[in-house]
Length: 595
Image (cartoon, rainbow, N blue to C red; front, side):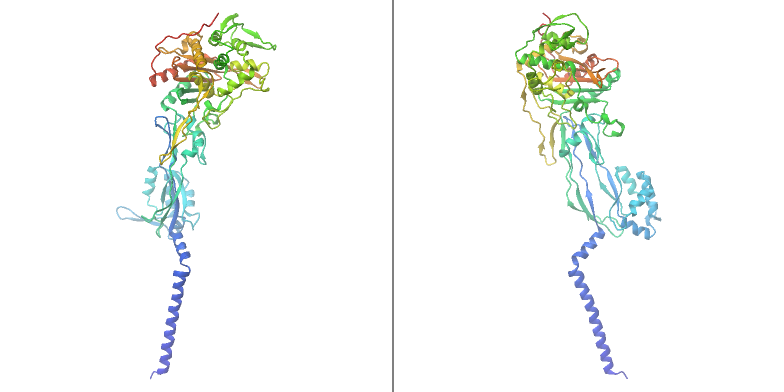
């Protein structure tokens, strides 16, 4: 017979135990749902939520017609969750089901080997990316695979692989304007407009969070943008890519023919000082910078300063006219070699009998002696002030990366800036230095009625929201009077019509004004036998529309401006045809060259 008292004790003990268990669960529930709810939620999400960067495309660089010179193409970073692959390793791999229903177990090392074959990596490197941090939910296997490679990887059916869009920079036109666009490297912008235009072009990356299942695979529809990405703006240049290509081909052909170390060609539109072409040879392809020598990176048109030689005589003549000291028919008795009042001497490039030349004739014959005799009548400080007004000794308004300012060769004080020899040399472009763009600026100023406008390479920046910035200034600087400028352009017609390079630079149907330049190259012990040769010209002379400047450095077989003249004619002819400039309707006339 059961003892009733003992039964009641057992029942009471059971009830107490039940309540004790319930109490433990209640306390645990309160702890989970109230006390540590936030922490536990965070811990749970950290094990299934993955935050990844979202890349936006860098902005395009386009030419004046909208032709793309630099853009971004879709590439994909291959990422995985090492924590997921650690579990796979522990389970001996993962199972892949074929279309016929056949099931195959693939080990993590096998998966790494198959993936490495598609990405051309070492399988050990891929395996390390799979497993190097067992607690991590994010690891990059490789970057910038194309769409075809992505699709091939997807066919491997490796669980947990996530592809992140990561645009890559490309230059569709290769070396065309590659000297200007610059390039991108792993650390960011590496040169040219990619650097100076970065404020416009740069994109802002964002972040996205997605949830993954127990197998490491992204749960569809779980992506949340935690920080939006913003693409870069469009940088529009003044460059005409077709013309720039033509100019590059033209200087490359002639540079090779005369054995020059390098060449440049500038095309400047006079009405707004827009740089329509700034070609360099050798050229760099920003898609393959490793294939070019370092010295070919960037643009020599902006960065290479040199003693320009006789092209400076056009500016010296303008200063003479503007000060009222000279006129187009100002007379000089010009020997082949002239002894200066200080006891130095100036000589012309080739010996000749004493000539009776006007200032116009000095330009036509490119006489160093003549321009020294006449130009030195202008006080030195006045000459220096005008040279600065023409934009010498300072960067252009473009502000290109690494742009050189040139040198005015000043060694003295304000009233006597040059020594007794240099004050003559600067009149014909020796003892000073300038860039090809600065030479183009001088001729552009004369062609534009004496007004120097800011040179333009970048027309604008258009942001994704349509905001337009970086519009260049159009405020000009009056350098010389309109009458002086027009008179000098007319005087320069004598060079094309009757100078020794006449046949090489005349363009049928058009009046052309221009000036040649052959400058000695200085070395450690003085001037050498090397030359920098150039030709700068304006067309049509009666209604100037364009300036073309061609320069070759150290030609081996033709060490005079005769090397540059044919290229000038070729490029200027193309410019006049391309932009449908009407032929001249009046004959070329210019002041007397002798007396």
